[in-house]
Image 1 (spheres, rainbow, N blue to C red):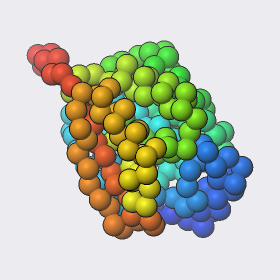
Image 2 (image 1 turned 45 degrees about the vertical axis):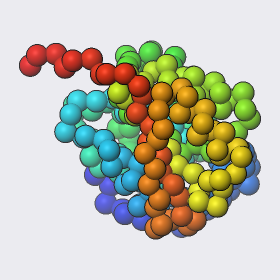
Image 3 (image 1 turned 30 degrees about the vertical axis):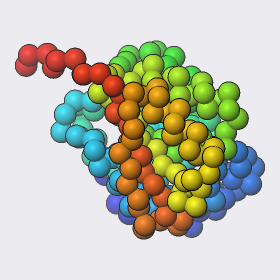
Length: 211
């Protein structure tokens, strides 16, 4: 599956801005992420290997596109968004994508219901630092519960907020749960620039079955 567009349309900007005005704590941005951020979010993923990938908070699909363009029959992909308008946008743009309208707090149950456990890679555009703390804690619990040992979790923080106490606290909490510090990459081609962070869950992945 490929998406011919490499940019974000005016309609997507308007949709994101309108949803931000409606719910700034859960949307957390007024413009879609750039293509460069999307590419950086999946740069570590081996799309030639069988895997299970989950995206949390796809929004208008700016981070979804680099995933969808690389999907093959050997990869299972699930997207979760709490906003029905964003889910409609994803399903309209990519009808074959399994996009569930639900909170990421339910990731463990939804992934189990779909037979997607354990998950290999999770990418997220959720604004963790602006979400209520109990919600963030539950989402992080679900993330660490579903990831296999050696699996990855990737998200980003805008450069202007990277050193705020709430952002530092989030990274510290995630590092404790994953058992190590993230790999960090600054993406300048975004408004504003963003730090992309990838954690690898501590432990060795199980051996691949013989083929």
